Length: 306
Image (cartoon, rainbow, N blue to C red; front, side, top):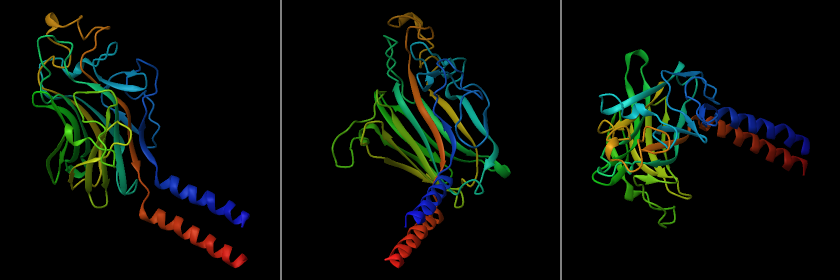
């Protein structure tokens, strides 16, 4: 029996590891100040490259915005507003069903502050935050699955999703408040010391996907967002700032701020810190069937030995 287990257990582990392959794995553990472009560590197996630098690493996080000493000024510089500072991670070869069938894409935010506390005379505007897209451009298609966190109204906050075959769907901050047992954990707000997570789960063979989000609080529940269709390949992952006005993250109105220019070291503006980005080929039913078959075979052999 011992020899049988020595054979079966490695086989089970191999089958499970192969089916749960990490295709993209940015943990942002590079040295502080490292520009996140092609030199940043991607521990995933799929070759991909950034079209422009995304920002800099700070204590194991990607900074999107203005922390105290690390500045990604493109979020509100220039003359553009809306969805700007787009940064695209393009795969060397489109991901198709030959790479994976079912997948899970997760963006883990460690912290954010979108309150505009650096400006004494202006409140934080709505529609400020970040948007992430799984994009397919193969064969002339332009199908997308979109998720994002952003401010809303006078002082609100929400998560949202939209895309091909899906209408705009949102969950307000007050929806994120349980731990599975009905116990209050935390609502999502413009300042989150524990951050939050966004996730897209899909099936390339069917083209279907669904989105969800949760707070970074321990035990928090996933809150369902929208679902869509048409995503049968993945060409790239796109990040972009949601910027309602020039300077709204910290690059403007320097004459009325509390303690200095948020674009300079020493004063924090608004920011979102991303702890990790992962795209995983999840175990398929066939893998589970293989594992179950191996265990059943082991059970038969044990009974025969008895």
